[in-house]
Structures are given as C-alpha cells and as structure tokens.
Image 1 (cartoon, rainbow, N blue to C red):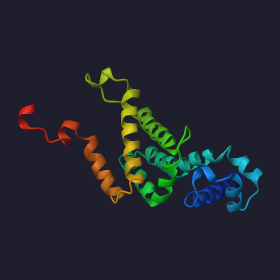
Image 2 (cartoon, one colour; image 1 turned 30 degrees about the vertical axis):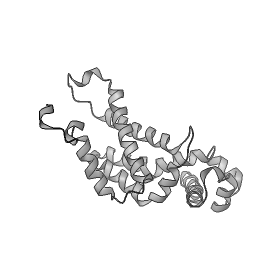
Image 3 (cartoon, rainbow, N blue to C red; image 1 turned 180 degrees about the horizontal axis):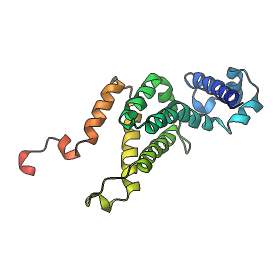
Image 4 (spheres, rainbow, N blue to C red; image 1 turned 45 degrees about the horizontal axis):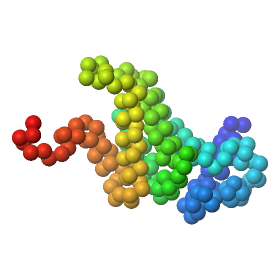
Length: 191
C-alpha cells in the first residue's frame, strides 16, 4: 500500500516538475498538477496539504533520502558530491524552484535541509575539542557551515554557472579547508 501511495506522490511531483519548468510557481494550480498526473483533486489532498509540500517531497526523495544512505553507510566524504550531482542533473528545475519567494521559499527549505543534514552528522560524530572553538555553540558552527553551503549552491544554480558539480566540489573543498586570510592576497607586511 505504501508503494502505491509513493507512486501517486511521484506522479503528482512529476506533473508539478513539468509545470514549474513552463509556468511560474504562483500560477500553478492544484488542478493543473492533478490534470497532469491524471488524478482528481481530492487525490492531491490525500498526499499533500498544498503545493509547497511538494517542494519538501522533492527535497526528501531526491536529496535527503539519498544522502541519508551515505550517512548510514559511513560515506560522509561523498555527501557534497552527491548533493551537487543531484542538483546539476536537474539544474533547470532547481533554478525555477529557487525563484519561489516568501516564507515557504525553496531557499528556506534548502537551508533547513542542509542544516538538518549537518545535524545528523553532528549526532553521529562529536565535534573535535578545541579551546578556540568553544566560545561558539555547536549550533552556531553548524549554522555557519549550513548557510555558507546553501548559499554557495544557490549561487551556482541561479547564476547559470558553467562549472560542473566536480569543479564546485573541488572549490568548496578548498574553501572549507582554508581561512579567508589564506584566500586573499594580502601584502607581506600585513602579518
């Protein structure tokens, strides 16, 4: 029974994805989604409260579930590559999703998703003890990385960057392993 429910959700999601590539989010109606999926309107409401919930389903099925498999199998080193590959595969879709504004924006959902992903890592592995880090709460540290990662991914998608997911991963790996002072060309006499 659960498979049939997921199949219907997937049909509705596919219909939504086809629509968002052609029509602004605000103009997409539930009827348009159900017509595209070949189901009646009440079927939509058995699976989703509104079209914003489809965004959450897309994040869950296309990103979160896949990443959780990596975490469960101690393959955390591959998370960012998988995340970038998934976004790159449907870059046009994600660009349209990032255009959704307001309190339930895709940007907000992505920030929340990345923060929760990092929190699952925190729950699996403790932070290293460091006297310099202790003035920041672990929550502040996770938010710093979550917002930086989320905004970097958004910029990559929204600005039509020609860089591949592999190039983005390499650049991000470099950035997170270096201080901002390592990245700028300061005169030698500054330090």
